Length: 424
Image (cartoon, rainbow, N blue to C red; front, side, top):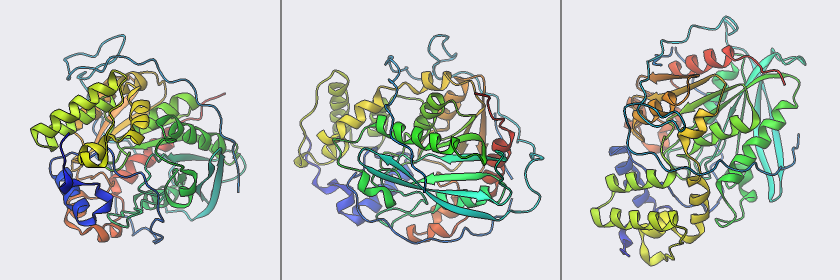
C-alpha cells in the first residue's frame, strides 16, 4: 500500500484539511470519507441576513425507532452515460428538457411572515436525536401549512450548517429554514447522529451504516405526520462535498419512497453507485498509482472481501479504513437511477452553475430516469445554496455571513407550495 503520510487523516491536520479541501473544490471533486469521530460542534447562532429575490429554472415529541425496510436488490452499476434510458433500469443520458421558472404560487404570503421555533426529539436505540421545527404564525390545527424536511446525512455539519471543526460553517440550514418559514412554509432540520446535540447517539464507525441514516429520516417523517398543524410533506435531499454528505439526495429519495411523502427536492444528486463514484473521484484527484490502489480496494469490497488497512496506509486508510467499510457497503447496495424511478410524486432536480463538487450531468441523469421529475439550474448557486462568486472568494470563517441565494428561496417556496397532500 502507498504510505501517504503527508495526507494523513485530514481532521488531525487543520492546515492540510484546508489545502486538500481547496484542491477538491478546484477540481470539482471531494474525498468521500472524512473523520466520523464526534466532538463538540460550534455553537454560534445567527439570524439569517436579509434576503433579496428569484429562481432561474431549467427542466418535546418522541418517536420510537422502527425496523428499516429491506433495501432494493442490488443491480449492476450503470456504464458511462448512454444515449437513451433503459426500460427496466433507467440509465444515464436520457434527454432532459430544461424547465421554465416556476410561477409564483398564489399561496405564498405577500409579505414575510413571523414564525416560532420548537425543539423536537426522536428516541433511538442508541440515544436521542434533536431537531428544530420552525412554524409560521399562520399555522392552525387544520394542516394549514406545508412542511419541508431538510434531511441530514452529515456528521461534520449540524442542523444549522455549522461544522464541528468550526471551519467553513455556512449556516445554510438555518438560513434556508428561516427564509422558507418567512414564506409560510414550516421547516424541520435536525442534528444527525454524531453532530450537534445528537452527537452522543453516534457510537462508533462499526455501528454506523446507511440503513440507520434512512431509519432516522423515516422516524422524523413519522413525527411530522403526527402534528395536525402540518400539511403536505416535502423532503429536501441536499448532497454536499464533505464527510458522508455526498449521499444526501439518495437518502432523500429512499426516505420519500418508504414514507410515501408528497414531494421531493434533490440537490446535486449523484447518479452512480458509491464505489463507482469513489473510483471516479480518485482517478481525477490522486496520482495514478494511488488511484489504481483505490480502484483495487473498491473491487475487493464489491467481491465481498474486506481490505485490512492500517494508519500506515495513509490516504487509503482514510478512505476505506475497516471501520468505514460497513457504511460504504451499505451505501453501495443502492442504484440511484433505480431508486428515483420508483417515485410517483412531484420531483425537482436542482444544480447550481457554481457547484463544482459534482458534474451537472448527474442531476440530468437522475431527472431523465423519472417522468415526474423536472430539472432546474440555478445561476451562480454553490453547494452551500449561496452566491458561489462570493462564497468562493470568502475566507472559511466568513461564509456564514452570506444569505441563501434569493433564486433558491423562490424556487423551493414555489415548488413546496405547489405540492398537494396525498390521501392515505
